[in-house]
Length: 116
Image 1 (cartoon, rainbow, N blue to C red):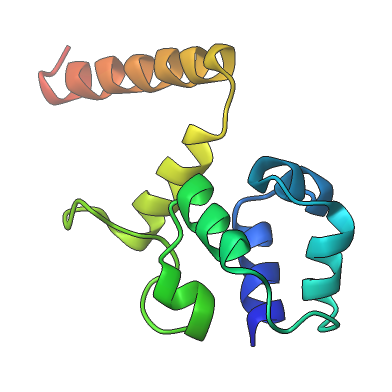
Image 2: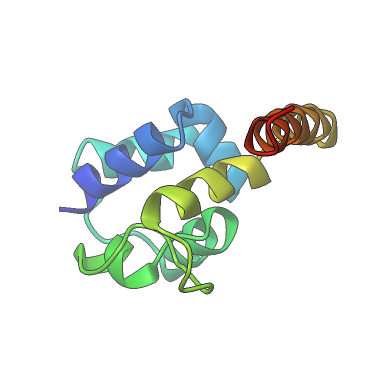
């Protein structure tokens, strides 16, 4: 059911309902109606917006079929796609911080492999 899939998506993205609604350009009340099952047939614009903003597989969102995130690069696992979708939501400053941490971890890992 759409309400469960949407709840799962919001949980996976580690977002609050109001922040999710704001990102997709809908009111919290609209999203809440879907989550409570009061609105079972949201607009096409809703589905398009969720799919576009969070890289969600439209088929999964509408029917539950397939993976939760659209994976255009077949080398990405669903977990990788989820992480990428979350990363894309971050501010530029937060992305820069994440990039620095990842670079440091990679350097440390490469140094271990080289025996340094």
